[in-house]
Image (tube, rainbow, N blue to C red):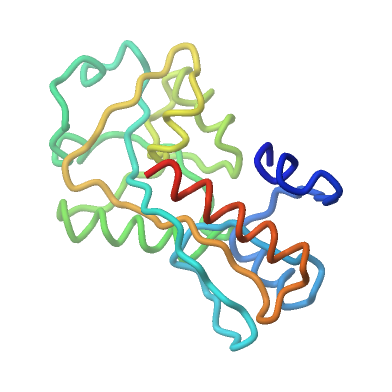
Length: 190
């Protein structure tokens, strides 16, 4: 947003927090012009353009007093076989949820043991700090969000998602300007 304002100060942007599936529906119904979401997502309409931006690996968020909090990285995923996890609900982003849990199953041979769900990452991290369970968050979230009582650890064979822009074909000039800014910011970070 800072770069968008710098480049086009006259551009008016309204941000709204929506789940992945809700963004796709809102784009299809023309209620929003641009979505920033995680793939895979059910983007089946021919009228939408999906532009993958970057891959984001999941990391484990643990209570800071957990025995694995100081273990050597990357952690062996097998160590989490009996670990209780707090996680976001499948209804929030079915494609991403299924991809993460499926990747976990294929790489580690067991299902994640989800004991509580919440759609809000900050609440999930509060539950981790309270010792309810660990959770998986993206490496981008781990880099941006520090929470007392929580440590982040890399896991060998961790699932990953891809951050993508989604917009309609033939975007408005304002949407095209935002798309260009997103591309430039991601390219500059590489």
